[in-house]
Image 1 (cartoon, one colour):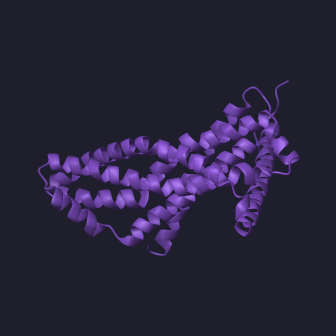
Image 2 (cartoon, rainbow, N blue to C red):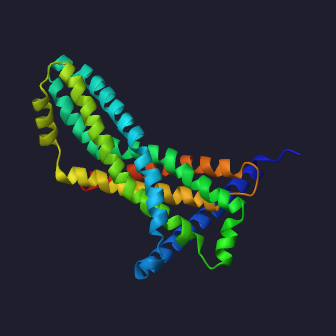
Length: 265
């Protein structure tokens, strides 16, 4: 029998509230385990953190550099097309610097991290839950959040700003090549980049990258911890990690943009 629309609305509302409660409980446990590790650093698994950092950071350098380079080329071509009508295509360098350092660099890197590492975190932890390995850890008095989640969160927070820097530098190089094709000296391009870039703007972009890494790791690990013991459970968890991570990053970036506008920064 087909359920009515009121039933569907009620079911989705209850599912949303239950999911929100689980998320709040998960974040609360992460905070508690973080304080525990701060006072007892020996309980933190640095080996697992380095392994996760290698997978999330080192293995993603090539794709981040490629995407950043192509992003710089596309942005430079599109901007130069409009500015060339006024004979000020040299100011493409200023646009590139401000756009990459403040917005595009962190958010593009975050989307790539959510697609690569967020889904991987969910799949790894989700597979362990389906195989009842998480229950085995709890039986041995090894909290899964401290044992599995915290190393991945720290790794994502370290990898994000490093990958962001690589993406931004690759984008600036791509823009430089485009303006070089337009007979603009590279020295003029880099002087404009240096003049339009401020320490605060660069640090703001890197701070956003750290926060984005934290959010992506929490969403990915949370999706893995809530994996269902069904045939498609791990796939659904990976999908939720990617979609939830990207959506969270975009919403958070919008909130930060509004805050920066209010305080004129």
